[in-house]
Image (cartoon, rainbow over all chains, first blue to last red; front, top):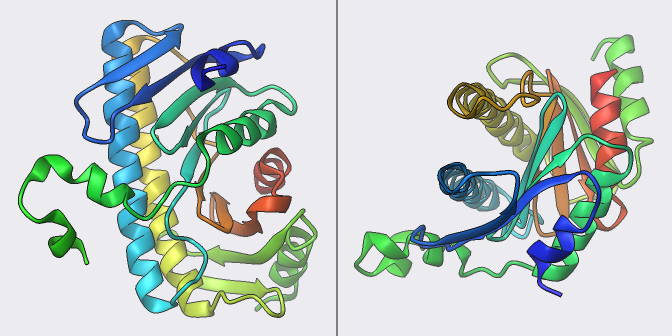
Length: 134
Length: 117
């Protein structure tokens, strides 16, 4: 079953979606409008880019410190939590055990994010992005 | 490290998979920390991590505020914590305290809850 559909089958998941690393496409299911899903995709892509940049800095101080490549991030709100793993995101209610279940499913279904993530995220900048990054 | 701080951090180290616990000032300066023996994390990495966590919490707060204002949806504010999930471990932070937990043992809910207390 597709990961977004699987996430949406869980009670308490408000919305889930997928965005392209390049930032040019997105898809979603749940309680979002097209415009809100577009905004969520931009927000998730920007945060993913940011935490990956931070992980690169951390890694330069301690080789193989265990943070790279970043797999995702979580923002815990008062009643809603936003989870992002790879290029998937979900908005979930703060219910008992839901966050752990959603993270387990997202990590298992997305699999380990590989080292080429930043190259893909930067792909629209053009030029030799690999050389610029490493 | 003050005795009270040390006791709180030791309590954080009882969380599933905890590798390190730390406190930091509002601007991200590492104030106190406890590291699990054998971990590759260093105080220098924790100091950088604390600074990035302060930045991430601030950005998440701004995004939550903007999201609620633009969409009319509620439930995002106030931010109760932020976590970055790395390849082997995750850092979970809230307020001026953070915990690094091994991914395979991580209980995100328990860790966020512990950081609320």
